[in-house]
Amino acid sequence: MAKGRAHHSKRPTHQLLLAAVLSVSVLLPLFVPAAATVAVAEGDGVSALGGGKPLAVGKDEGKLVAEGDAGGGGSVEEDEFAGGFGSLDSMLQWAIGNSDPEKLKEEAADAQKLSEDELLKRRQEIKELMEKLKMPSDADLMKIAIDDLNNSSISLEDRQRALQELLVLVEPIDNANDLDKLGGLLPVIQELSNANEEIRTTSAWVLGTASQNNELVQNQILGYGALARLVKMGYSTSAEEAAKALYAISSLIRNNVNGQEAFHSENGSAMLQHILVSNNIDVRLQKKVVFLVTDLADFQLNSGIVQLPFLSERLFLKSIMDMLSRFDLDLQEKVLLAIKNLLKLSSTDVEDFEFCDLSNVLLRLGVQLEDLTPEDQKEFAVEVDALRREVQTLFQQKLKQGKATVA
Ligand SMILES: *[C@@H]1O[C@H](CO)[C@@H](O)[C@H](O)[C@H]1NC(C)=O
Ligand SMILES: *[C@@H]1O[C@H](CO)[C@@H](O)[C@H](O)[C@H]1NC(C)=O
Ligand SMILES: *[C@@H]1O[C@H](CO)[C@@H](O)[C@H](O)[C@H]1NC(C)=O
Image (cartoon, rainbow, N blue to C red; front, top):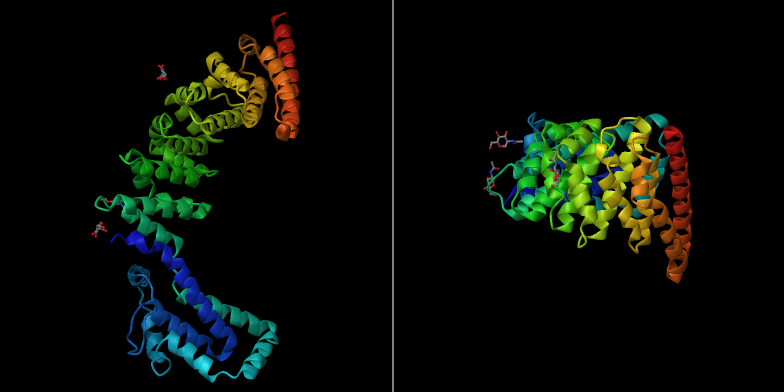
């Protein structure tokens, strides 16, 4: 069995254990040190105490904990505790059997009366307790998933599971930053070439999640040359695969000049255009492309860096503007936002918008919004129409400026 199997059970098991120990420590303040000791014994899965009955943790748990416990500091406490309870179970049994509800209430009340110092001390004890529980860190969990990915003999199912674990684990930025250090980026990138579509899709997803708003990871992934493969995946006939490739590409090149340069040299714009002009393609995919274009134009507007010549190419602009003739309010709104940004770019030429007959396209859209919108979308149509007017004004301004420059 691959090590990946038991991952999901880990955290819940630890949380249960923690909850049990914490509740005991709250009910029986005097026993905090004892609880800590028991937890160590259980966490190690060692039954040196004879009566010690390991909790039902996954089979890998012991191994993982053992790996993280090179110091072996737990054994001393086990010895100290040898005369006490054999296991957390038996201590709980004892606590329940010997507790007098009234007394527990008193003790709980006492706990509330603890002084600042005592409270601090208690908090420190609980903190140490948690450390002793040796919950596997996210880095430990990432390592397991990475080892699985790096193992050529594991099943597709386990490979997919390992990727899905990483998908969740790389969400926090610190974990994403650790991914390459732990040797995880290359194995994930390699999976982009897996023969299995689902695996390729999930790897792209992991890369997109890890690099989102994270310049360090963006540059690491770009450094490994993953963009070329992702651009190819954008042509996939599977909408899911193409969507995740687009997601990863967007994450990688967003606000990242290196990424945009790589995207350009990998001929990424041809892929975007392919999605825009294909008739039988999922409209959600086209919306993603339009959104990406808006974002890239926005970056160019704010940074003044002109990295992506395709944003000003006539044929590309035309494929964006052609989208306005589709009867889909949501798409039309996104396209208008894109055109708004593209019009503002100093690198775009107003003649190219004229060439695409933008004036008439906007007029026709106005009529359509007014006359052909179903009753339940009227409100949305009013918003889209306001945006349409804004674009029209921008276009007129750009026309005037263009004429002024020529004159
Ligand atoms: C690789 O996976 C196989 C099959 O799950 C397993 O038997 C083997 O121990 C793994 N190898 C390593 C190095 O983890
Ligand atoms: C993956 O396996 C190769 C050998 O098969 C090894 O050189 C490399 O260090 C491993 N990577 C990780 C992250 O374990
Ligand atoms: C980019 O892709 C398009 C469409 O596949 C192709 O016609 C064009 O030659 C490519 N350009 C470069 C620079 O590779």
